[in-house]
Image (cartoon, rainbow, N blue to C red):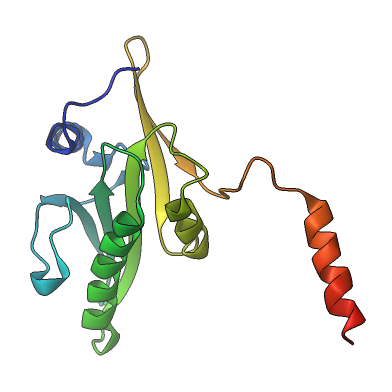
Length: 171
């Protein structure tokens, strides 16, 4: 499988694609601008921040899409990292009169191990952090696909049924 030689190369590629048509190639959404390596103070430095502003009836609506890129298997610290960025934005606008639509995405190579504990953290954050796997193909180029619902391949309903029966006996 073909891969980027570094996260920096992946970041540069995404930014260059954005410069062509103002669309984020990860989720195919249009934005006004893209910031690269923008410091959020003590909360860290996300790889990319896509953003847009829409004014409707004199009211500003801001869309912020924070993207953290990884060129390796997903780890628990990666989930913590993007959660820090999300926390920063939420804390900064909760006391303001801004209308912000916040999206957070973690980008990882295709084939993320579904048996990694980090994947279960993603499940717990499913409504707040999107995970996209990317793959490179010499014929088809780059592809981003949202992934979710990680589970063990040997999960069996029998153990769950046994748990429920045990719990019900306690009533």
